[in-house]
Length: 443
Ligand code: ATP
Image 1 (cartoon, rainbow, N blue to C red):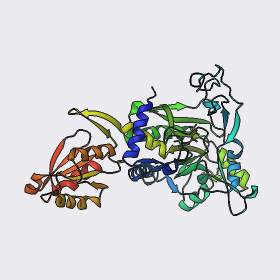
Image 2 (spheres, rainbow, N blue to C red):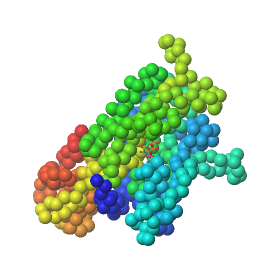
Image 3 (cartoon, protein in one colour):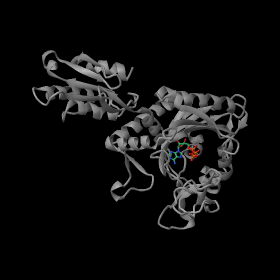
Image 4 (tube, protein in one colour):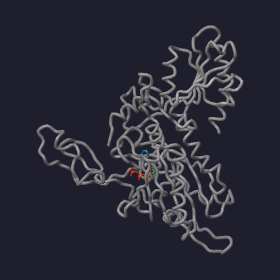
């Protein structure tokens, strides 16, 4: 069941607490582009770092890369994007709304007939027109056809054209992978649902190069690994599922493809794709560039163009999954609270530090605790207003722990540590706070 009001409350919390703002808000905003505020930038960075660690640092067979957004325009001819990265666009002549034809049920305008007073029962859609999703711009001062470049619509191509550079410089052998995190741009016809579908977004992509014939095995392995990664992140398993692409859904390059879907408040939708791209991409780049992209097996001396298994995850969509999955409204002791039950590993702030009252040396003691911890974890010091309100703000920010300095602290140097989810409080000596938190945050 779609719950639009839940989305509204999530968007409102994201703004109130400084996770996500509308781009250029003071000018009325710009269509489906969003900015990450102080807490959002930390959350997204933590997600990207977690992905990078599991892909690059914890494996010997995957290397990192950061390719430029602008590439030679021939790349996008070879990849098939110039000819084929299009969506069918239809307009409704009655209500003037615009849709993607492939997302409409039986070519019916979803706004019709109930929403247009006095309109006929039949909606009046135009024929679908193909619309290329790539953003075009010009390199250099001359705005002519020879100077056209594109903002990349996926990060993958930067990996393919660097496959030889990376393999040779890092002395990898097939099978091996290349991972990259970076911006991508698509001039989407129907963006929306907050940061779910935007025109500028970030992808975390890993391309794994394998011998033909071993592709099915590696595809299975990566499909399972990627699902497990989301479960390990703490996403509710019952809200995750696979969707296998039917033959008519498969991209032109793909032999088999699975989406990982999440049950968002607006329904089940993809947030990661696992694709067997065969030897399509390297084959085409070999053809278009004239440069040999074959691999020679050092033992068997076989020559082949590697097959590619791709895992492609949107950083923004993942952030939305994490926020939606963490959002809770609950009542405790007759009071309503909103909590983000974020996995502590990705929470923007790990510890809030509060003097119970702003006198008797409590702020000074709390500041000292803050100074001890801030080199180790992102912390937040707050002495303003009622303690309950300060807790509530950190609950909304998803901060897993709260340290309070109270009257007893001044007698025996102990502080209370409050747990966001259970609301349990432990009394811990100030000297032990760091190891207490270390154990629970890192361990
Ligand atoms: P859709 O069919 O929803 O347009 P797609 O199948 O074209 O998506 P892919 O090309 O497989 O998507 O992109 C891989 C991942 O990149 C997606 O799972 C998603 O997380 C992310 N992504 C793609 N387009 C967008 C977008 N417009 N906004 C945010 N993230 C996106």
